[in-house]
Each structure stands twice: as C-alpha cells, then as structure tokens.
Image (tube, rainbow, N blue to C red):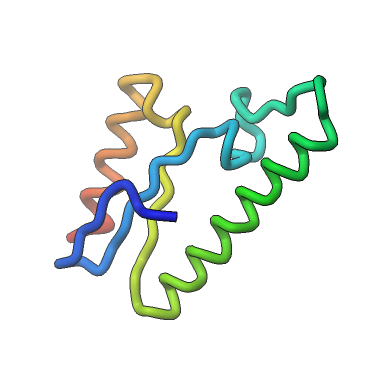
Length: 91
C-alpha cells in the first residue's frame, strides 16, 4: 500500500481511505454487498487487516500515519474540521 500524501519533513503519511473498501466502522458507506457476500467479507476484511499491518510497520519506522475517511470529505463543515485537525497535528 502506498500513502496518498507523504510529508517527509514531518515523517507523516496520509492515507485517504474509501469507507467501503477499508471498512470505516459505523459509517453509512461501510456496507457489505449481498451478492457473493462471503467473498466480499473476506476481501474487505483482508483490506482492513493489511491497513493495520502497514500502519504498524510505518510506526516502527518512526512515521506517523493519518487516515482521512471518504465520508470526512463529503461535507464542507467536516472537511474544515479535518483541515484544522491536520494543521494542528503538523505544527
């Protein structure tokens, strides 16, 4: 997995995750298709497990990873909060 944004100066990477593909718990976009359900569950849970492995590996290398969820970018108000949070983290 490759990060969407790399901020080398801050040893920080940003991943922009789709809520469906990366299993954003509690999100309206985190659904499971009913057709071939067993296959989809294995596929999507595998994605989420890989995400955790990659984040752990980055942390061991001294990097911070930030996850931006698709649903956080949908509304201007939420996007503004996200921008302020990122700015605070990178100070």
